[in-house]
Structure formats: structure tokens, C-alpha cells
Image (cartoon, rainbow, N blue to C red; front, top):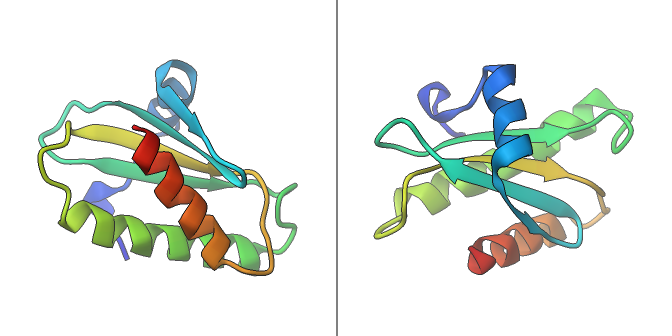
Length: 109
């Protein structure tokens, strides 16, 4: 799980990234990135109630994506420091498809 200091918690910062950030749209999710203010990357994951009505499912998807981001950021070299927001649009039964789609979005950056 991603450490608390690497998570975006302020809703105004998240809204700013959603409005002004660079967008990479995938099949099941959208990745928004913007140049960060700190010397490390920060992230947020948004899973709306309309996407998954169960809080258990929304939290499961968040944990899955945060775990993937943690491993990705651990080996993140020669990349600009960005703040990022992952917005999940569709949840499938196969959660691995979300991670594959996230990988495609990162490849486009």
C-alpha cells in the first residue's frame, strides 16, 4: 500500500489536477498527471459510487491500484515528478484488466 505521504488527500489539489492535468484515457480508467510541487510523486485514486455501489468493492479497487502504483513508483527513474489521479470508469470482474489498462495509460505518457 502506498504510504500516506505519497497520497493526495486535499480535494482542491485533486480537482486542479483533474481540470488542468494531462489526460491519458484507457478503456476502463483515466490517468491525469500534472507537474508536482514536491520532489516525489503523489497519487490519488477515484472510484465513484455509480461505478461500484458497494464500498467494499470501491476500497478493494483502490487498494489494488495503490499497490500497483507503489511498485511502479519504486522503480520510477528518469521520469518527471508528477502528481497523478487515477479515475476508474468501469469495473470488470477481472481486476487484472484494470492494471493492464493502467499500464497502457502510463506507456502513453
